Structure formats: structure tokens, C-alpha cells
Image: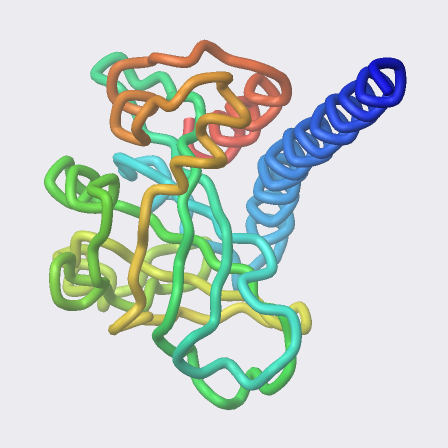
Length: 226
């Protein structure tokens, strides 16, 4: 009986360890997917995010594949990451976020949506890393302009704390995402960094270190946003 219990306990511990490893791989995939999304958006020529906007950004959040199946209406959910620029211009390791609700328009139909949020000021960042904020209510958001060169409307749009961009079926567009709720993904932070740091502690205070593939993600940010 004792042997059976020992074997059962060992099997359970191996199952838990395997689940934890798989979950950690999920966080790594989220980071690598976010880097891929930013690379591909910036390779879109005249439909890319203007480099002048990214170079002035205080923070960048990317949500790869926000939805998978279903018409994009309230109740949808996606996972993303956020990095911020410090006083020296260096980019932080990513904190993990979730986004729920809101709408980017019925024209996207059943397609998965990649989202990029460009945060323009420190206050917008501080609001974004709170436990929960609602875009459009707690933090102003506007559809971001597209193209290599910023247009005349950019000055108006840059007054918004956050600029939103989307991609579906290879097409890019600016989005407002009013009504969407952003929350810190504390479980993902704990799995990836090994302890329960808050998103603000990771991106503002540098807690958690830089596990792989943080360096590759930072390189992507430097490449497009210096």
C-alpha cells in the first residue's frame, strides 16, 4: 500500500511538473509571437506604423491572436505583453497582460486579430499596468495613423494616451478598442519570472530579471523603436 501511494505521489508530481513546463512554454511563445507581429507590421511598407510614433513611444503592448473563432464582439479574450522605455531609453522586460471585451468591428469576421497598443505618456503607462482599466474610459485611446510618414492627423491622434493598431488577414488598420478591459496577468508573470511580481514592478522597477527570450524581444523593440 505504501509503495502504491509513493508511486501515485511521484506520478502526480511529474504531471504537475509537466503542466508547469508546458505553461512556461506558453509564456515564451507569447513573447516570440509578439516579436513576430511587430516585425511583420513594420514590414508592411506604406501600411506600417509610422516609425516617428514608435520612436516617441513610452510603452508598447502586443496582443498576438486576440481571438480564435467567433465574431469579435464583447466577451472575447486575448493575451499580450507590455514593455516600457526607461529614462535612458532602454526597453524593459515584458509584463504579461490580458484584454477582454470591446470590438474592432464586424468586418474582421471570424479572423484572429493581432493588436498593437502604442502608449504615449507615463500616465497612460501607469494606468495600463493597474490591476484593471477600461480603454476609452480610464485611458483614452485612438486609432493610430498608418504609413512611413506621419500625416497631418497624427498631431491630433497623438493627444490620445494610447494609439491602437490591428491586423487581420494581413491587412492593417487603426482601432479604438473602446470598452475593452486590460488586466495584469499575474499568473503568467509568476510562471515566467518564478515569483508573483506585479506588472508594474517588472516594467518599471526591473524585477524578475530577463529570462529567455526577453533579449530577442528587446532587440525587436530597439530595431523598430530605438
